[in-house]
Image 1 (cartoon, one colour):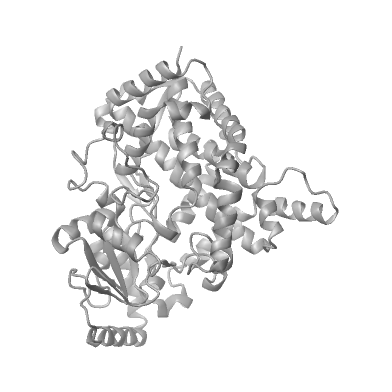
Image 2 (spheres, helix red, strand yellow):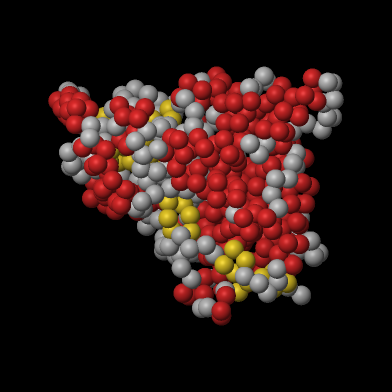
Length: 503
């Protein structure tokens, strides 16, 4: 999705004006589209502008713009984006149709041109961006589930996660009384948890990362480029020209990030060839065992790092911001910890006892879902959904941000109120379609079990060990909660707090 759509849209006119012959082809496409006969109408939606379609109506925050449009056009609607069609579901009923009833038929993936791999290669190397749910995709999902996200794998990794969180606590203890950017600390922690899980290595130094902002900036740039407004997505006929240079920039980031672990892949392969394979295997070993090439490993590792670190970091930052803004909720979390935890060092095994903390986590995901429009699906063929025609190759999205704030399903939907989850069976595992922060169906986030463990654990450790205050004695009521979006929902102004060790 677009980061700054309104401002970037103006820049589209210049390259388009230089390509008038191609524009005539685009107009011809529009003509054939509108004159085509279908047995059912498209979902309702605003009238498109010539050439651009409804791009300008998406705004800088498309999840909000689309939620507002749904008030006029209904729970399922359609927009024209360049020469393509976007179908948007904005209600529980629409989500059920898209993610459950027609899950198999609508399980293709809409892949932006900025993704640094040919579409044919994605089917062999990607879990998130695989164009279709083929056998190779199923095998990669199975490996991820078995090696990373199964109950057995999660249990075996618990000590490693606890060690990385303890490293975070020790770092913050040394920063007592100083300003700290919560997102940066959370990022370094989550990145090291994942790097040990995937490659048995630490890649992140708290001091170095927070001073240089190297890896966090790189991955944020990668996600930003994937979600940027791209002429190639609006008019695929222009894709090879890369008019905005987005594909080139994405590939540069891709190469820069992958250079970090390529020596490890080389050493691991050479060690195996000499018969020096380690008795303790990790995810990289599992990929080598199924004969993945270095290129395939690079694509998959980048995907897992980019998706896992940014989304988890954002959830931790949003949760801390909501608790700072709601002292009563913070007090309840602390009271629960005092009651349930009888030792200084928090363990993952304490989490099931912390019901209010889990409710805070769920309420944060309701108000601030990591990907508010999920990752766009694609209709491989024409289908009927809710008595409307969904054209072939349409982009299909579900606005989980809008559904999570819909007063039809939620009392006081704009208020941060963790109590709503205390006596509720609602969960985020894809069964309750009014609460879908991780999606549902065949394309549900495969890392859900891991995120459900380490995000609350990092959050609990921050609260259990430290008291937190805003800099300069600022009032918590004035804390800025504005957001920005690329593919992921990010706090626009990073959360800066001062830690004080709890006695």
